[in-house]
Figure 1 (cartoon, rainbow, N blue to C red):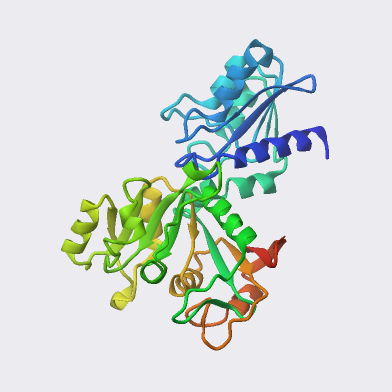
Figure 2 (figure 1 turned 90 degrees about the vertical axis):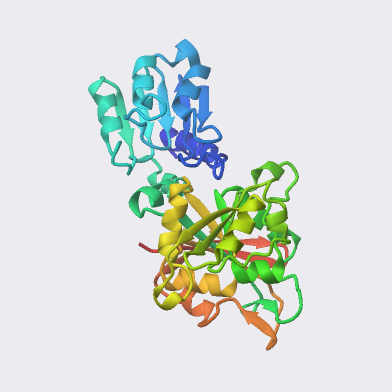
Length: 366
């Protein structure tokens, strides 16, 4: 790797530490380097402010004058709740800025880099762009598609089952389960369907030592607002936020009872003939909350619906070597998971051994 690539790789690694914590803003990282030494670094703070660049410049101090700034996303050039980061870099007197990618946000979209060039600063763009786009996938999805980036997680047996009918069974082992909790911590929200809450009564928190405070927003897609008031989600709503997205036809008394327990209720349209929520509209509703990265954790009907509507950007499959057999519940409500993953829509990007299980990562080809 060149020096620029090596330092940008370090910046991208730093940016990923903030995933799930900086929404509605992307988790951007900035490194200030002078004479080969790192003199300042910053990453978007929890809640989205302050931005990475002013934090890195503050740490570098006067030494930033004549230094090089490495940023994972083009510095902003517009006035929002904070002044433009491009202006902060100009004022600090950096001599060069290396950016991994331009910002697709139309308020920036090349203007930040232009402002730097106009100020006499040398600019290099596109260094490790593919890696940066992966890190900033949530920001890109929100700006380009008007919805959050969607990661679908499925844990399935060797024969494609996610459960055994009438019986609770652990599909994957401890290492894979820990990996799922780490995935939750890197997303803004985790989504489940009404059937999953009724059958499994999940908590959907992050239960990894040291990361207990990284539990994402917990969301139930529940057309008729059937979520039990005695469920673990509802009972813990005051400790960690829970949102229910239901249809306009959901009984008002059910929605009011949930709200009285601290659950936030959203109403969106359903599909034609009332066949479940309109998922595209539901995701747009989540964008209004500022969410950029959401993780869908089943069950079979919800996974099928997201795949059928082509709303999955990334699919993570935890495959167990065990076989459940004819009494199992298929991973998808109809159709074959193998067929979906074998289609040109998805490409396998990596696999990781987790004890007896294997974690497969697929990306939507666009």
